[in-house]
Image (cartoon, rainbow, N blue to C red; front, side):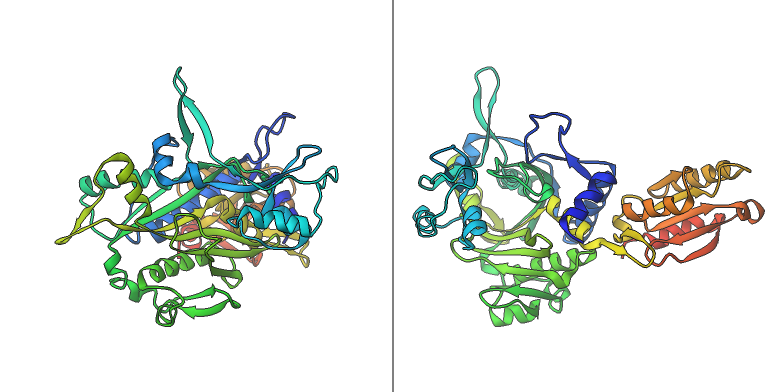
Length: 485
């Protein structure tokens, strides 16, 4: 299915919608999750914790969204966190330079390229403002940080543009109080804020968005010593460098030098296994190694995990080997010590980062799971059962002859064990279709036979298969069908 189909589903079935949409002055780049979207997001995060955080015994924190100016001076964001922009000299409209060039001239240029390169292409291609046909001034850098003033004096601070900085500044305390050992993974889920020049395509480019970030602190002299590498050495991943993507195991990627070491390969393997369990078509995925002008300013080595969608290849996760950039700069700026003891060795840890865009991931899951069943004239959201916002719909065939009361009884029994939805109104076929569109893998129908023998009809979403199940067994049957793999 395509982007427009996903948007239609999102709006009609309560997955997500524009913020403050009743007001004309509502700004672009802000979207809100409805009940279905919150259900999907929470289950996605539970899978993330299960498959990555708890699997590796990582710590999880919840840091502040507003941080002092010193943090971002040390991190380099005040100087480097900027996108290239061009402004029309006639109407004053502002555009992101790299995107305008790609869409208008068909030339892909990294956002980190020198400003003179943008000016050169704009001049050579004779590009003009799409609104008024005016000419563009020279390319400039626009810092995307949201500044705030704290207290009546308006002390300068910033909304965080990424969640990881609190992990870095908290590292000394975490390592000491939680009796940390290298390698140490610290995770955080929360909102980040970027003053995007041209937010668009709903969840794909936002000014306020969710991230799930993991920072793994390690001893740089032991990147080849990974105790659990055997768990993922045979996991296949698709990697693209300068050539076409190749399907290769993590072990082969290290041996061939495509991935620099076992430490990086281990986490790329874990990430690929995680996304396969989300229902994303892993055959349409790749790890793309970034060139020097594409990498973030703090990264030594960078791979983007990208997935093909109807809008093109979409970056879902940035995997950055940040070396000692962050801890070294925070140590210099703060005057505090960030070195730790790793056995008998004093070490300033290096960091490998797995920075996941939650909103983009959820959009991709929806697009890859949404399908049209022409034979049965229905739209189906074939989510993995454990990710579905509604696990089971509980329906009465009719509301008379005691069926409504029996249906309510079954619903009350189930809702304590799973996410159940009660529906009495409308034709039964229409109610099945609504459940199909919201991704509910199961539907239970209470009918006249239920009154006779205490059984119900259990319907499977994907196959439309139906079978009779005893009410006394329904809890265990549903639990088995929606369980994590």
